[in-house]
Image (tube, rainbow, N blue to C red):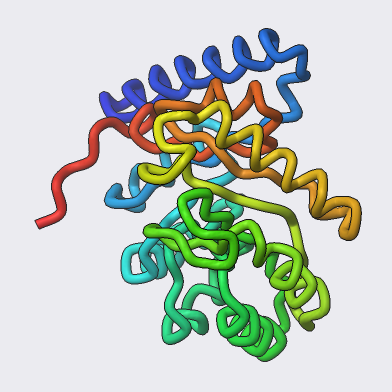
Length: 239
């Protein structure tokens, strides 16, 4: 085993222990929570090692990094999640490799994703990104739609050819009433998920929690956690 593979295997084992312990504490089954490893800034070689270690879900937030990496790893049994703010001029590229876009936050993006998914004959999973730092109908600092915009956007995704409404995603906010209150933020997301599922029962995915707060997300009921640093290490500075 190479040094890097041993390092990643050890880190994955620690994260697995954390998720398992959080599930026990929350009275949940371990299989209710899916680990997504956020591989941004790390090379395709690391993605290949993660696949060898059993990882099946990886995430990226920049198309210029993700597209060549996904191409280099196209032979692997991986599901690719796009989690960053997505500009419409990147949609054609992203739809080419992403299985799920977790950052859907405006009608124009829904239209662009639908058009491209149909063109490429793909079905694309979509999560509505919820901005808990935004006004009811506003947008968040790091993307996302205010809570008052979820219903309309979900309806657009559900009715769009080539798209599948999978659920909700959030990033613990740095500002606003939920800043520094991760448990409350994640519980609010779960309440919003319950509301969404009353109209769209299959949209039961809840993506929340990262390296620092995955336990709070699991406690609240998250179905997917997005972990980067705790698996791959501290990322190099982008210069």
